[in-house]
Amino acid sequence: GTLVSTVPGGFLPRLVFVLVSHAAFMLLHLQICLSHFTCRVFEGLPPPGQSWLETQVWGTMNWSCPVWLDWLHGGLQFQIEHHLFPRLPRHNLRAVSLLVRPLCKQLGLPYHSPTFPGAIVELLSTLKQTAMQCRALPAIAQAQGSAKSSVVTR
Image 1 (cartoon, rainbow, N blue to C red):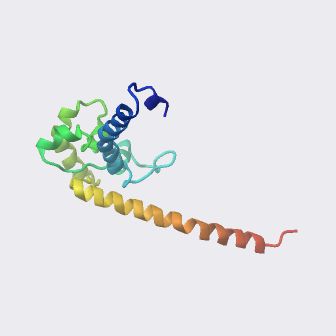
Image 2: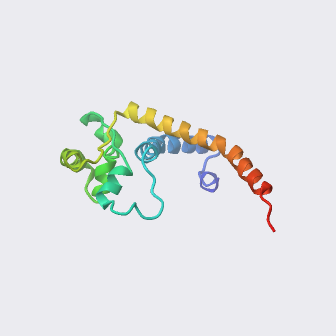
C-alpha cells in the first residue's frame, strides 16, 4: 500500500507498477516454491549422523530444462548445486551439476531433477497433501479435546 501510493501519476501508473512487479517476481516465487516446498523439512538440527551434504541434497531439488532456458531461470533450476556452493556464479551451475549428480549416485543420495512441468505437478500434489492434512486438524483437535474431558483427575 505505502510503496504503491508513492508512485506518481494517479491510478493507471500505480496499476501498471503493481502488474509489472507481480509479473517480474511471479517466476521467482514459482521457482522457490518448486525447489523447496516438495522436499524434506528439518526442524532444528538435521538427524544425527546426517552430513551437511545429505541435508542439502534432501532439502531441495533441481528441475531439468534445455540450456537455452538457463537465462530465464537464472540458475535457480540448479538449487542442489546452489545450496552446496552458494557463492558459485550461476553460469557455472550447469557444469557443476555434471559433477554433483554422479557424486550423489556414488554416495546413494537422491539427485531429484524432474522436468519443469513435472516439478509443477509435484508442487501441486504436495500442496494438496498439505491441505488435506490441514482439513483433518479440526477433527483431531476435537478428538483430543474429548479425550481430555473424559479423563477424571483428582
